[in-house]
Length: 584
Image (tube, rainbow, N blue to C red; front, side, top):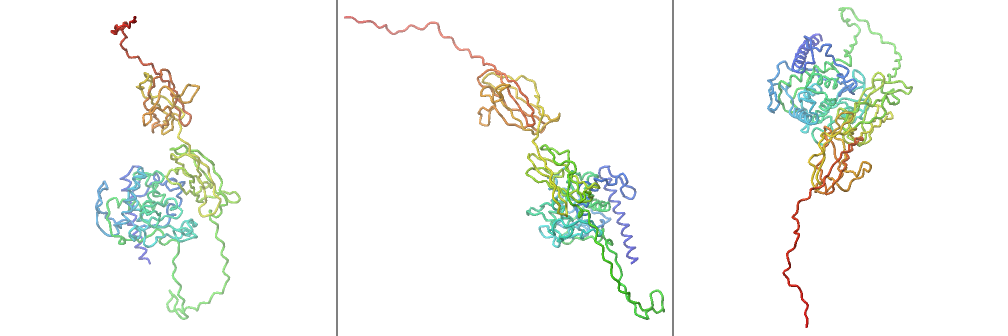
């Protein structure tokens, strides 16, 4: 036993050294917002903040419910460096299966990186980070034990999250993913808990399903999860926040960073099923206490430690009535009776913008006492393209010490209308709390011409100067705002004029009303204006959503007549003879 314990200590010392080197190397290679002491540990200035740890982002228990993970660190000798541009698909190095990544699993990570580069380019997600997390969570899907489509041959399940040594997460999927209808368990190669998969799940292999047991689906979901709050993986602070949101543990962070640094220096592909599964887990030796079975001694047998002394026969203990077990204390979730509004009950957000207010919900007992550490699921319901700032329509947030959970800010698309942000309690049937919300159209409150040239034209011609205006809202450019340009009869009669200047439609016919939209900078350039044969002064009125109005004066002058030859004052004499009267 002591020899084994000594081996574990020596191995732990080596692993700590490797982790320290990897973290120090990563800190040196990225942005200078990470510092490390001489042992590779984060200094106090770099300690994860509340935002880093996931507090307030809906990830108090992370993507995995803070389930156990593999603690093995990479080999000391890294493979040869890979091409810096990442363009080569040739294995960068060869070596033991411990350092290699199974072919299908590696393909899933690279496909997820490519998909995220299109969907969330600002995240700068490297496939090596997904590989590092995949190795720490499941040993690369159990050494690549996957089918051709990427589904694990054998389900990969974490421990029951019943609060004994781990988080206490009551069932949220009725056992659909984890087979447990009492408690949740982390599922699949990236170890998502069911409640997180419900909103983070993705279809990575295009089969129309979102399966946490499929490495293509799980890798893409992990990438979106890490990128959901606009964290940038090219910065150390962004990557650190994202990793800690996956599993809120500094040891977990350092282990993932060690493998990330290792994979960045190059790796190689191994056949599916031939990868090596790590052997050490973060829960090794915790959650239970091993004991040796007692061996009864027969009468006359020497007692241990006292050779030659007969042991006295043991006297059987008197039977006693076992104490009644006390009922377990209810979990915070089990004490919730109802939800109340916490702050904003309804809000309005302009299309294309992010709300400044956030929906809040408070969990309370039947007596009105607030309940902390309860997970609230916020779901956007309705026919708009509104999402939370991470691009999702579902977010899970834990209530704070005051029992309040604030949903992420809302990001509206271009589709206007009413929708609902619905709050429910995960793991308990409580009446949902609906927050009403509305997306209004983009608006402008002022219009101004960008030029001052006179708008004049000769009857029958076209205006040489095109009208251009700029729309603003509260002093800022109002982009993509709907506008209408109309030739009106007068300042008092805003109906459409039936004569004077006009625009042309696609077929060249005159039109005197146009529906337009400002560009991203708030500019609106009207088409060319033409004049009919009627001279005079006319009005062009431009209005926008939001009430901005601008009226411009157009002048049409009469055309100068072309000179024509004057008629002759005399006419040539007729050559025909005059008629004469005849007589007899």
